[in-house]
Amino acid sequence: MDQIKKLSDTEIEEIIRKMDRMFLEEGYEKTYEWALRLIKEYPNCNMLIWQAAVMLDARRITDKCTNPEKYDKQINAWYELALHDENEEIQHHAADSLFGFYLRKKDYTKAEKYENIIFSGYSILNFVLSTMAGLALQGK
Image 1 (cartoon, rainbow, N blue to C red):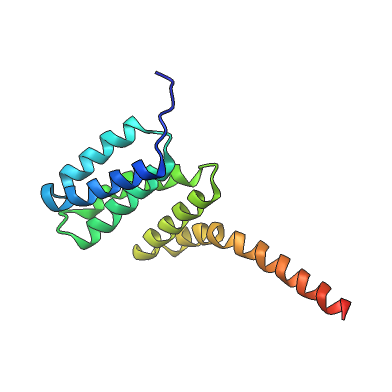
Image 2: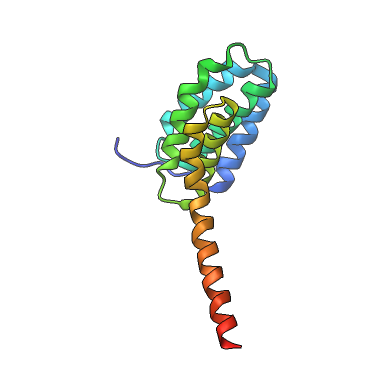
C-alpha cells in the first residue's frame, strides 16, 4: 500500500478539534494512543503530525499527565519528521517547537541548533531589506 493519503486543512482542523475533546473525555494516554494510530494512517501528512505533536506536547505540560517525560522521544521524533517537510512553513513550526522543548529542558546547545533554523529566514530578509535601504539611500 504505497498510496500517500492526503488531508485537507479543514480535515486536519477537524482532527485537532476531536483530539482536544478526547483529552477532556478520555485522558492523555488514550488520546496519545489514538494519535499514534492516526499518524500511522497518515505518515506523510506533516502538518497533521506537527499539530498532533504540539497538542500532545502542550497537554502533557498543562494537564494531569503522569510521567510526561515518557513521551519526549516520540513527540520529538514527530517534530523532527515535520522539520524535513518540503513546506518551509512546516519546517519553521517544527523547529520552533523543538527550540521550545529544549529550552524547557535547559538543553541550550540543542535549542541553539533549532534557533538557527528559525532565524535563518529572518537573516536573509534582514540582508535584503538592508541592501534595498542602501540602494534607496544611494539614489537620493
